[in-house]
Image (cartoon, rainbow, N blue to C red; front, side, top):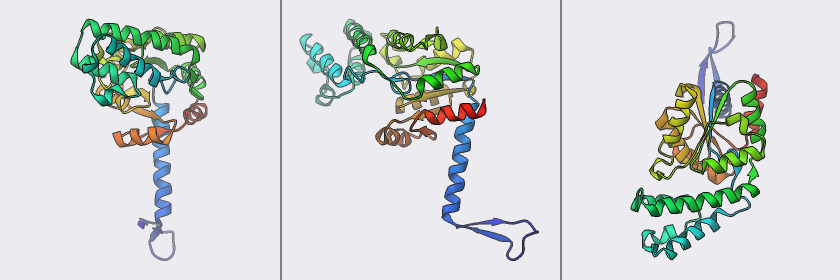
Length: 262
């Protein structure tokens, strides 16, 4: 229970007893106002690609791609580069990271990255748009925000997807993604810093939208405010546990704020 002072025009005790429900309501209202400010104050918006913009592997399973990457390594006689957990991990990025840690800047890494890029390009045809993402992107662009893609995915795959949705002009040429220097993948802020430099952006006036702790950590290291997108409770928990203050379950929330403000 919280005691709040009242003005002198009130009769009786000069404090108002506020129940825990009222305090909780006030906390939610404050959080909502802070989220609104975070969205409306952004003049430069950096989007992670797979998640906030689309589900790249919706029709071309990432788990299958990860398994194929492992099989490719085994054919090269490189099975021993991966731990037992890494060999069965459903995220192909885990395989890429693991190989890069043990054979940095090698021909093997370059070949593996190139093979994975081809799988991403193939996945574009069956990718699912994230609900409300197209409208959010077009609205933010229309009101004058400068947009960029900052992703661990192939920039070529991101560019091809944006073209299929008629969104390329909202971002071009500011699409920054994976290179063969895999140590620059998020949580390293390399792609965010490239975007900020190209846009001439003050990091404090930018906003990173991502769906993974690595996006949050990269944003923090680049000095950029962060908004988490979580399409399910599992992703929300991961983001909250990592320290994300603002997380939305739907980009419709962002769209409503933009429409109300502008």
